[in-house]
Image (cartoon, rainbow, N blue to C red; front, side, top):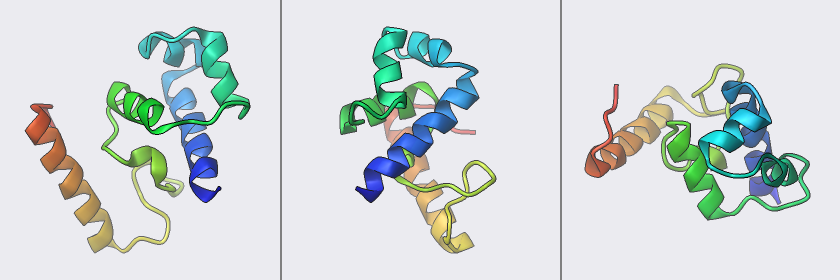
Length: 102
């Protein structure tokens, strides 16, 4: 249950970043009413949808499953070393995929 709540919180963050539900839906090529089902929490966010949202919004793999602090990108309760480790793993995965990482 904890992971589902985290995914819904992160979906709300992504909607804010995109500017609207309609814009995020356009980016992931999904009808806005279908994305609304997720944002209203009437539909579970599965692994495939998480991966798609992370990819389209340029988030590291696993971002949807982590709680984030007030500043985007910081993990709640994580030490700087833990955060750095998560970042380096995401960087390695992105490099293997051929994604440019800044």
